[in-house]
Image (tube, rainbow, N blue to C red):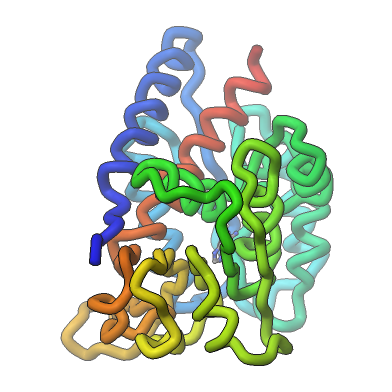
Length: 288
Ligand code: GUN
């Protein structure tokens, strides 16, 4: 079984990011990513810290706006509006999940589409569906880049995506079934039956379920490639943060399938790389 590490792919993306940052610097522009973080969800705090660290390493400014867990919807929308109107901010995202009294959908609709580096705004989702250039969601871009880097055949192959979220599964199903990629896509979800059977006939499985180690070795064929998008925090007292991340794939399956992406060290590295790339693209589009 081949380990599909994300590092080499991320390095390629970061090298393109570094070139764009330099190109922008020559025009006296420093790309800036604003992140709105509401409350203290432990996993979100780690993700936001990783985003801040990566931006700093690649000459991109970050501006993290922290709101308390009990902030109101109007306070949150006013924050988004101010960042939309700030010409020094090129990319803008609100870290999910939000506390239950707040609507993530409303927040996404309020973000200016040309700053929507998550690619979640309905306009960007529509462009994705039409195949029109737009800011595309980061994790789906990362999955596709990983598959292409390792030259995993996709045309005509049975690709099973597990999980229909707007962040990963749904946009990925569109990207993979596009002309030029040409996969035959099955999008499984919480109401799908016989997941084991669906897995058994898949050439490629992309799991974005978010449940630790639920994809079992017995479900996989020896030619199957598994891309594990799961980043499930589990308690670990040996870590300073108190958590470590495991994937959706049972580690016992690593020796059964043809190839798998590790967690951590797989798709997760690419999500942040594409976030920086989208931030640069957003800065380029605004100023060109
Ligand atoms: N929470 C988990 N993944 C993501 C992501 O890609 N974007 C945002 N905004 N929040 C998240």
